[in-house]
Image 1 (cartoon, rainbow, N blue to C red):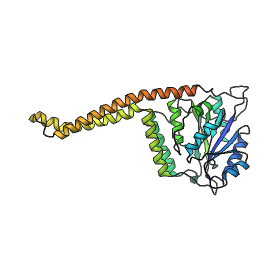
Image 2 (cartoon, one colour):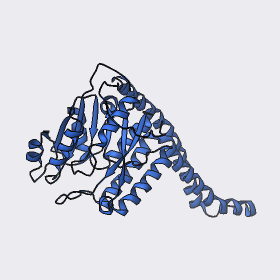
Image 3 (tube, rainbow, N blue to C red):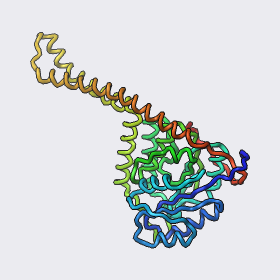
Length: 327
């Protein structure tokens, strides 16, 4: 491992909503696994004793009033100042001990994000519908952006300061993990993956995920990110499909014209002309927006480079994870 006299400041960030049953053990687990880390619990309008239990367990407790995980992450990333950030859920489903290997990998290989790939042994820990949805959306992300992660919905991640302070956080809900993945892919950040145990929630803790509602929101987020990050391809594809439609509509008119010299379906000819015009406009819109997107990406890259790179530490973290091929 790289040696340095600088001991990195490590912050554990736990967004919470009604996690009274699990937050105490979660905080204790991270404090035992990483004694040098500071644990922050951000309560998102809980109606139970989440705040009191987290404080009693030794966490720094803060509040975010805007409902939604994305809103909480935005607040955490803005407020907390550290060199290494660990984000997990407060429901004790992620193994705090895995944080050692994830932090070691981030520092040793000078990465900007390490994703904890969920490995579950209990059927109730990870429902079949969620596994299928994860694979589906991971495949979609790979097709649209050319690269992806093994588990794009994992909430267990370790970040460098460069990632956190260059990430704008536009999402408001559970689609935040998708936005994080796309941010890393678009800026071509060095990233890694580590397999982690994913356990069932403890008794009394309930999931806040809605399979269909959150799945629809994630699909919309992927579409929006593709439109904003790949405008030339997005609008160009629409233009191509419109041209194909126009050609299909034009074939009967051309055949009739070649045989009779007449254009009997004049409204169809006007419709075809309008479709072609719209197709051309889509193409030019894609080219113009692609230039704008390139400028935005350059600004994000400069904000990313303005932060110090992750450095190694004299601290020893046992274990190693496998490096992801995303580069």
